[in-house]
Image 1 (cartoon, rainbow, N blue to C red):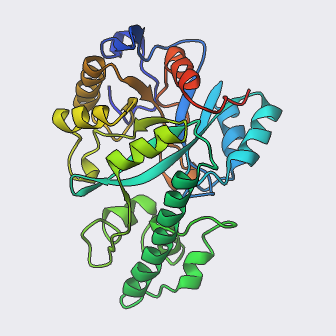
Image 2 (spheres, rainbow, N blue to C red):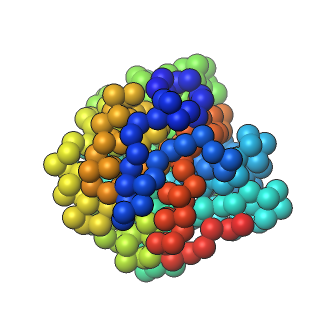
Length: 310
């Protein structure tokens, strides 16, 4: 399936069935439309949590997950909007992790947002992102007319300042045409302006999520932009730490990777999810371009500590 087609998979184009705990699950074009990965301006999206939920309703979604980077600050606003517009909300977060010498992300669904260890780690990453952003702006200011104030103008409320906001500032200054262009060159990993930041070890993050009563799902593990896709031996080790699922249907996973990941999900009895990774105007990703099966959501809801907001 072409990840840029912006169309949810049809049964004839979907990879083989996935099993989890003896239950046959996998994406199907069904009456319930579920998108389990979106971002608001609580992290690096361009819309408020409420606007994301309203946009999900307008896009014909029945269920949407808000999974901002390393923060749950948008949950309350999103939940209020979900009740108002009649969309079910899955509360989640996307944790910044490191594994095998590269940056990987872990989606956590329905965990306790007040769990002390997980909350402390998320705050540590949030602060590290802020410090990293300042260092990058310092480097960029030597070659471009960029200041910290320019970057702050691109943030809302207490959102963590990160590379997307730096990209938006560069767009506003006319240095690059859009975020994608900034990330492809000036802000790319390994560029002269790039600075690493603290991130928790992926196995430790999985265990923390489980301790907090959440459901850990590996985000876009077939993406080549993060160095290399997660291989079978790595996935097997993560399963031993308690990984519950993998995000199979995602535009950053090329078609061959989607097929490989679906097969691995079946082999390891993992949940297979699909989603948009929506960022509003920040990325070309569109709500509902990939979907998750209703049975997968039911398994997530049954395993998590918190309930889906309906």
